[in-house]
Image 1 (cartoon, rainbow, N blue to C red):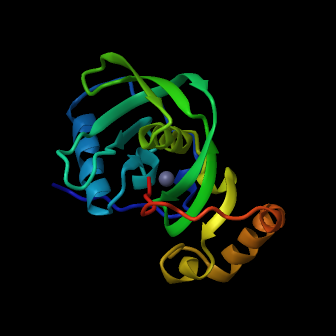
Image 2: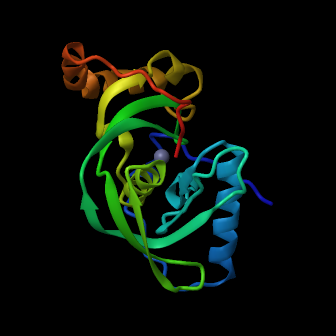
Length: 203
Ligand code: ZN
């Protein structure tokens, strides 16, 4: 088992569009296994390759509960081919330690992807954590981050200086952050922030 270093915002790799995988060799299998190990180690339910500094279209997800048998899924070159409905729920991200937001997503997604053998598969997820995780991780492959889609802040600010953004200038980041959030925070004043019903999870 080898653990990979998780990249934190504002690492530029998180903003890049990841490249398609065309060769399904042992290096891809090793990357997937190392990413799963890293995801479990960090208590995440999903992880995309850019989050470990690899700009390739590979992501791993496991939404099984703590006491259940692990059910990891490796997605290579995933693509959402159908989406329907809407759901809003809390999201965390391993690249933003201890920061959680309410994010609006499609309720149902049908995702087409390849497995480690290069076989094309289709999976449907509807109104659940898997659906949310798939959308969050595919965004990572496109260089998109959940903070850009947040509809409200659940927990941020102080935690950011404590754990997050270790590699950047915190003051500068906070200023930038506040600027970006002003509009969203104004909306917040008129809408109550729903309390999370369960422990927040990070992808
Ligand atoms: Zn994430």
